[in-house]
Length: 73
Image (cartoon, rainbow, N blue to C red):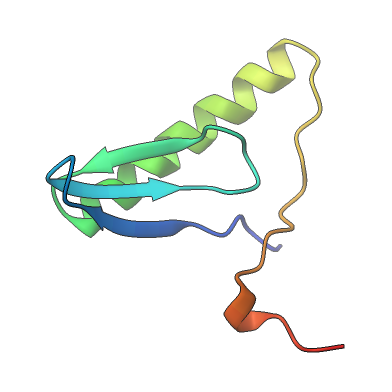
């Protein structure tokens, strides 16, 4: 099964790492290390999906691919 792409980057402003899932609007998390940010965004992903399902909203399938992985057409 294809899973959601996760971006992880260091934020000077926040003084730590931010992880986000582009396919899930506003699904992001913070950590003091990349691993902590990843663990936190996995929890956020689970909560995001559960909340959407509880409200009867659609959960988008994993679709995002960074430009580096997209082939020219």
